[in-house]
Length: 355
Image (cartoon, rainbow, N blue to C red):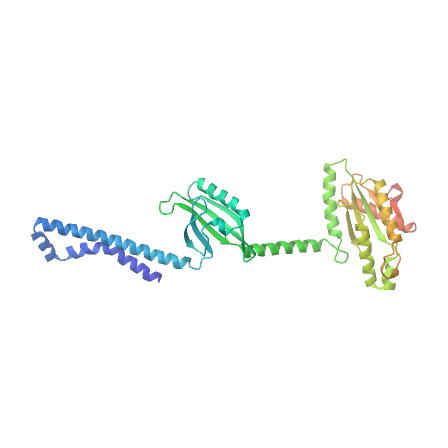
């Protein structure tokens, strides 16, 4: 069809010259014309001129019709809706797409009307051919759809005199983007939380304490206390009751201790039956009270699975200008070792005797 239209255009472009060629190609006709009276010659010349003008006009109309049909075929399966509207959003012409509304405002939700009107007015005040892009939502069969709208100022074009509006449905791309975002969030959460107890894991804790150390460098007046906890004789529970019961024990301990800390604190499973917690901006005296409450709650708990009875040993250290989080963690581990070495079920604070 495209080749045929090109041939048609070539023929149409030659049509204006056919009368001239037909007149001057025949010499006898030319002689006859010269033999006619001047009035008839003038009338015949005028007729030929008018005929040529008509042929030119008809040829241009046919070319436009051909181009219009070609453009219609090209845009028939276009995924975009292209409209011409006025500054108020009233529809003047639909170029492509399906659009049943009489105004852009009727197509979108009411909460988007103000933004759309402001955008139309802004584009109208811009220089010709300048573009403006915005994203809006609309309800389609009670399902939210996402649209990208491109506005272009064409008010100064005599054959348009409006604002070009290109509406692209980006719902599928937006849904895919949301799914990818949720997948990343889920993957990030799973990578930083213990799958058994659902509390933060070692990776989460290390990232959190590094951020806290960076803040401590800027705010010298603040401090933190680190708490390292270990379940006493946990291996005996696994050996005598089985690993299923051991898992329930870890879940129960995690729940108890997580409920005893503040939102700014972080309680995490550091590995096996070992847990770690940093108490944000808490001095050693207050940190010792928190650790003692945890120890007593664990000791007196009656909700252990299979009727087991367990205790914990805890080591505490206060931040004193350490440059690396690992240095502080190592001191808390030393204090924990001292608590276990001196009889378990107790809290020990790191001091010079622990070195």
